[in-house]
View (cartoon, rainbow, N blue to C red):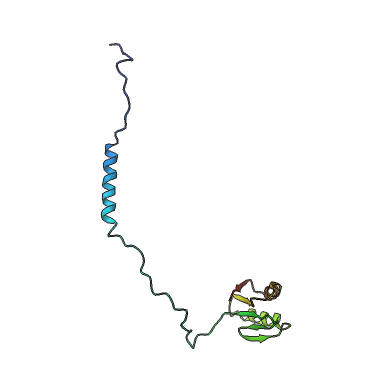
Length: 133
């Protein structure tokens, strides 16, 4: 009963047939389920930009407009440059909104816009946005 090293050489092999069977079953399941699965969400019609806002809607946005000639408007109300810090501080104290927008003329130097941003920060506004049009 001696052991022979030459006659008992076993090679280990992986039997992949069960794995292929499982893979084919999964492929068939996904092919059956795929046409039944929903494709996406139903989209509502996008809002129309041409529609005017309702007449009773009150705008709470604060927009500071700077013209090329140096004129400053807050929500289309003219404001003198020397009175701008007080007006911005008053609007901040009223807490109408937590942000303010600055709109400058296309041909205006950015330094004028930067001065208005500095004045708004000095009045207490932390959230200041720039409008391009």
